[in-house]
Image (cartoon, rainbow, N blue to C red):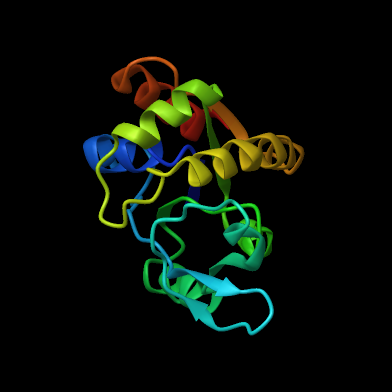
Length: 175
């Protein structure tokens, strides 16, 4: 079973890291494996190295791309039993949704999203600048309705982590 968690950038990884064992027991052979995502210049189609963004306009010049060939290889290696977290509304993201049996749309209000981005710890530092936060709020307004129209299963993440994990497991089992 392929499950894509999207897009709450703080909750999806927290759920996977903190509670993946519980999810694995509920969803057959679920694994936290991700495909290669990278930023690509829209004009040159060259990979662009991420560094903290201070201007929203930077996002107009790049797309967030998933290496779909690599993603398909991951599905093949794990007999279609994977869990992946994250994507973005630009680039080729819509091109791989059909690979997943379920898309879990993790939703929260914009204030909560920004608070989580400001306080999370991540290697890249993504989400710490105002430009990145503003773009994520724009993406949320655009992308949430699109994913729901494509059949994504909405889970509100305003509560405590344990309750959210229970809701996710319930959605995985029932939908």
